Length: 341
Image (tube, rainbow, N blue to C red; front, side, top):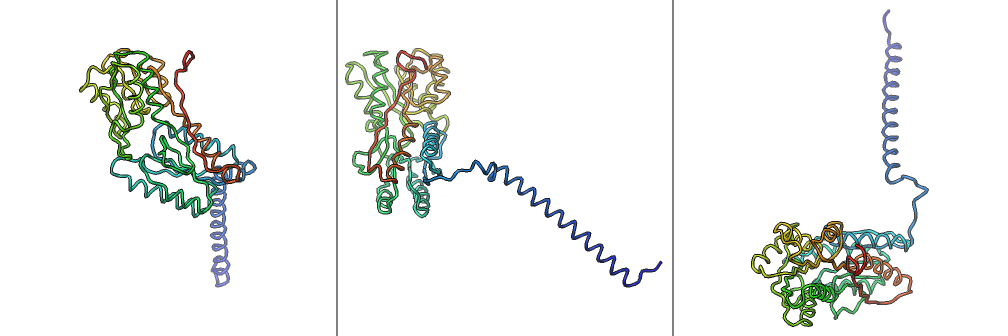
């Protein structure tokens, strides 16, 4: 049987139709797959999606320090409680000689928040960073601006939420003296952050320890060192200090990294119980070291409270219920006196 022109034309139409149907089926499959993926993420349980009344931005250091993990968790928890959507932007941790780079990154996130006309900005202020221009810009735009800091300069006139390293150092010194009395020979491990330009004896934590020792004649601070930025920075600092001053019988630490590092050195040298360690902050490893008796106690800066009051203050200012406030947040000691860890 010979195909004439009509037959070829009909066959061409059939082939084209089959190809078109195949392409259509393939596209439908792709669309369905995309919808499934989208529904499993962004559109999952659309009935549960909430609209927030406020939009907040938090600008925090990019670090594994447990203090900042607890701070961020508290910010998120309080934001949800206050019916606010929270965006978190991260900037590199301050190190010596790189303050300008850090400030530029903070400034970038701050400018984005300002252009977005958010309902509040919470910023962790590393020591030594000058953020007065940001506070003034935010005030001019009527956007609540709440810096959070370990220590806030007395000259700061805007809102802030801060701890007090001086009080923390004094408490650490008091604990050590309570155990060792006039025989205490103290080594202090300080933060790697040198952006404030302080020498060892100018650091608030060191000054607090020094104040405690003045109450007990015969005690003295033998040495002070800074931890390094590396993950083993606390361990290296402690090893150097003990190598130079083997008479040290108490080590007071500024943060969790220094605490864990000092404890590891004491364990490695087999002198657990012979050297008192007073640590700082709280995570699972610090708790374990306290339970094992390697660390006597830890003074925990209340990062959770800092986060909660920061969000509450920003929202309160946005709604007109609160004005400029400077809030000082204290600390707790673990294990609690007369209680369990």
